[in-house]
Image (cartoon, rainbow, N blue to C red; front, side, top):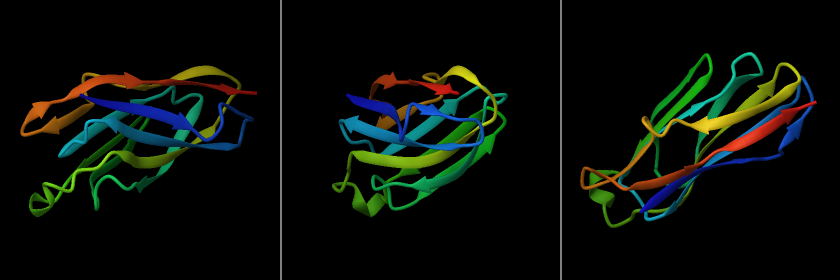
Length: 130
């Protein structure tokens, strides 16, 4: 089974500062991964989605008010070359003081092998803005 986790470059930022969030795929590698991260849009704005090392390119990189969506898949010819590790990174800019959860939406986050969802759990984070 696969695990999708969020790791912040820091757990505490000041208003106006940024934090880089790394999306990690661990456990079993997946042929395809869809991730939706949600956050309080009054506290953070998102930008700068960057592909990691799991897939050669990302199929989807979408930033909306309060969410970041990322999708990746292996090339059909590269099926044996499935990897785990850094799926992608993105940047959050702190807009106001407070404490908030940055969450993976488990209903919209999947890891797939041969069409079956192999996701066993997601690991969210809490950030403090001072």
